[in-house]
Image 1 (tube, rainbow, N blue to C red):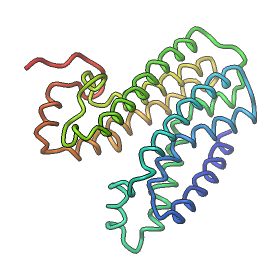
Image 2 (tube, rainbow, N blue to C red):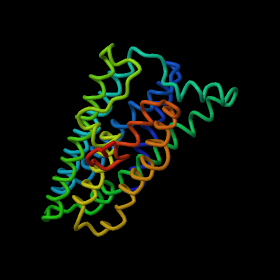
Image 3 (cartoon, rainbow, N blue to C red):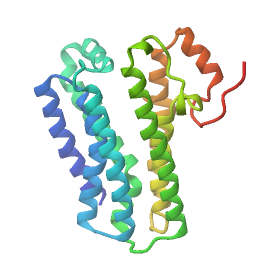
Amino acid sequence: MITLALTTIGIYMGIWFIISKVLKRNDVADIAWGFGFVVLAWVLYLNRPSVQLSIALFLVTIWGVRLSVHILLRNIKKPEDYRYQQWRKDWGKWFTIRSFFQVFVLQGLLLVCISAPVVFMGRSGIDSVSWVSFAGVIIWSIGFFFEALGDYELSKFIKNPRNKGEVMQEGLWAYTRHPNYFGEVTQWWGIWLISFGSPLFLWGIIGPLTITTLILKVSGIPLLEKKYEGNKKFEAYKKRTSKFFPLPQKKG
């Protein structure tokens, strides 16, 4: 099953690498991210369908399609994302080879790691669900609410010309500086709980642990907040508002 997952995503990311060369923009990798989970989940399900996996498939499809379409609509009329533009400058003549391994291959491997609960559900083929699995669906739903609404609120805020130079701190953003990231992480903890009862359930925790680490320590929150270092409005917002978990704002 792991071999099937790696092969599927290897081919999938290889196709997106070719697309990136044709379009001359590596940020298509961001669009490929969500769709990749959907493709992998469908391949695993068609290989060995089960009740447990069908639930995960439904939820992963909703999450992945929404995320990729959101990123596609956000980026379609804009130049390549600033992160990838910077790498073009930094990598110089090694840009193509480093893009392949450090963007597409690495992202593919991370995608498989995060999908661990789904991969192991595909291996076990369990046709029953427990109360833990239902709890997982509820947790996933909470996460989806935060990610989808957070993205919508931010998109609406950015489109308003009056908000240029301002910091988003309304709606869900008044309770956490990153409601979309909180939502994404929460959804994968929910997916892991849905896999409860499968023989490799405990190993499936690799998935939510990977996405949690990436968001909190590597490419999520640290990278984004570094962009706003020195911004007085953001620093004030930062002091009042929880970094990750939704909490009431501090007074003062």
